Amino acid sequence: MPVSPHVKAFFDEPTSNATYVVSEPGGKACAIIDSVADFDPASACIGSAAADRVAAHIDAHGLEVAWILETHVHADHLTAAPYLKRRLGGRIGIGACIADVQRGFRDIFDTEPGFAADGSQFDRLFADGDELAIGGLIARVLHTPGHTPACVTYLIGDAAFVGDTLFMPDSGTARADFPGGDARTLYRSIRRILALPAKTRIFVCHDYGADGARPVAWETTVAEQRASNKHVRDGIGEEAFVRMREARDATLGIPRLILPAIQVNMRAGELPPQAANGRRYLKIPLGGF
Image (cartoon, rainbow, N blue to C red):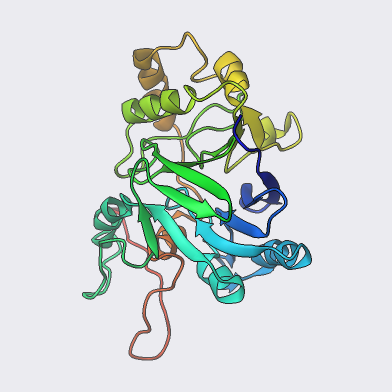
């Protein structure tokens, strides 16, 4: 039987994001998955309240951070990974295809000449099948693209951390219309996740309470997803999914924080370098009129 790691979730209401602290039973080592930095777009101020709640839990339980993990480059919140690394230690990891995401966005945001689109801003780039140690726990990385090219799932004992690839069963699946996204690829990644043992716990990155119909939730199982996910339950084939996903994506607006989030998150959470006047700037690419 796979080990069942201890999982503590921290739900950030402004971004509807769940951050996880995953620790070995009876041990001190832990990993932080999908952290959040506070960001006010009106004032362009970045804060640490959400990250401090995570850090307080780690300090209170005497845990030691081995890894600060990202499931992908998030488009709806800024990561707190560098802040947590400076405060608690650990290494920042993400899927190796982050380089594809960086290449896709460096021209959109007109990054500085020295910007390296090779993932080197992160401490570790994970390929499909890679393993990492969290004390006595061994985590396995599954490359699960479709929402973005760099999406990964972290399988830690009986727990799978799927990022935005899957939502709770009554909310369905992630969009696939961001640069590098693909509905067909997403379907195949999801079927790979749903091929895990039925009792595998699935922890999602976001929940919106089914538009207010129920309290927010972030934990489900492979069995529940296969039985009742409204987009990919058993019996829904690839072609039907692709038609649904592409039609639905065509109706969706862009996330509120996508412009600051991607610029920061593709740099492992660091801000762009200072301009000549000593200030740092995020850019807003303009469309047509």
